[in-house]
Each structure stands twice: as structure tokens, then as C-alpha cells.
Length: 124
Image (cartoon, rainbow, N blue to C red; front, side, top):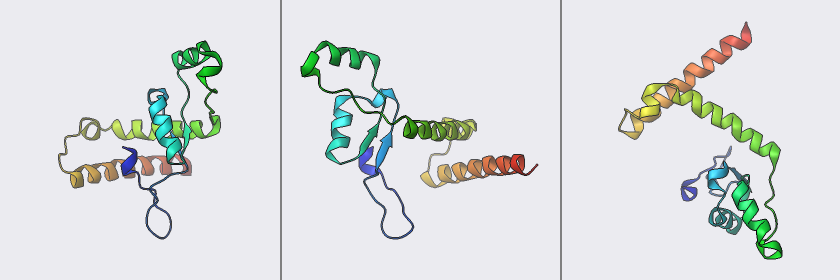
């Protein structure tokens, strides 16, 4: 999945290497962290309790505790809530649309509905 990342900027071609990747504990494996480290990407992933316990059990051979930027991780929560709002629309959650174009159209329509609803809430 990381090989398909494209971060668009105001001009030029999209970057394929973001500054940081925020993920939940399911992606906290040593392999994922090593892949991000090799590419120079900051991993904003909390460590699982069992992984921390295993690391501590090994003592000095277990390595250092993983760094965790709590502020960046909070921003991940904002994105997660938006995805949940998008998935509240059944057509997106179940993926009825089989072609990428029609699925993207559904995402755009749902995002527009969310934006209009939020806009109406803030103006009144």
C-alpha cells in the first residue's frame, strides 16, 4: 500500500514519500517500522502492549522504545472520523459501485453532502 502513496503539492509532480505516516496499533510491526525507516518516513504508530512487554523482557537486546508523536496521532483520529462519516453511506461502505469512476463519484457526492451539512451547521 505504501508504494502507491502520492502526496500532491501546489505545483510539480506528487511526492511519493510523505513526511510521516499515522496508523493504528495493527500496523506497529517491526517490519512496517523498518520499511518506513528505510524510506525516511516518520512512523506515528503506537506500540502494542505485548510488543512493549516482549521488548522489555529482552532487556538491552530488545532495543529502544518506539517514539510516538501524540499530536500527530490525534490528527489521525480526525481522518478516521471522516472515513467513518463517508462509510455511513451504505453504497460506499458495501462498495456497490464496481468501477473506480462510479465509486469516486459516490465518494465525491457523499463528501459534498458532509461539507454542506457542516457548512449549514456553522452558519446558523
